[in-house]
Amino acid sequence: MKDLHITSSISVAGTLRLAIYEHLLAGDAIGFNELPGIGPLDDGGKRTRYLQSLVFGSHPGYQYAYLNNVFDSWHQLQQRLHAHPVDRLIIWAGSDGNDYVFTRMACWWLREIPVDLWLVNAPTHGGNDIASYNQQELASLFTQAGQITAHTLNELAREYENIAARPELLRECDENGQLQFLDEAIYDDTILGYNNDKRWISAVRIIGQIIGFSDRRNPINEVFASGRIKALVAAGKLKARGDMSSMRTFELKRAKE
Image (cartoon, rainbow, N blue to C red; front, side):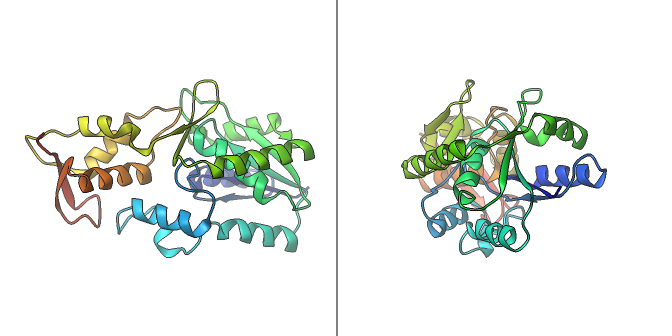
């Protein structure tokens, strides 16, 4: 049986490939390097420009600066499935807002592809998301995979359309697994709290604190944290000195009120 595993996360895809290498799973794995919990979803070009606006110029982890349309990955997957059909396509998702949307995004893009879709919903792992599982743990979750029926596929695809039509640009899941639509500035006061007006602090340290102390159910990622730093500097609430082309080459200080 030919399986193809997809996930929103490059790191999770790497763990799945390790499980495949160790013969714990079969097939191949693709990581989309996507963050569908943030940004517009209704237009690929607009989404790309939004993501590009968040990251610093030399950000090493994401290739947004080199893309014209982040949705090209979905077109490539469609082409791959037409050229090389598989028996099962398995969506791997955690319990955060990113993977909630990713599951529905996948259903929308694959709704017209003749392939059996399956879903693995990974529960929070010690309070952390799916990226904290190792290859043995992910493989054990595969026994809980459920097939997505045609009816459910259409429902999830329509839900994605409704999500994409909303104006809010931040999406997280609450403790009940329900998607919440939030303002981008919701964490700005918390971010300002990591700074003071007495001394300069390296931007990479501040971003590390933002990520490290965020809710493990909906961890703040580096891209979103960088974007909020940029927004707070532009609004005059944070002062910056140094070269802002990289988070490692400038410092921050809270502006005096």
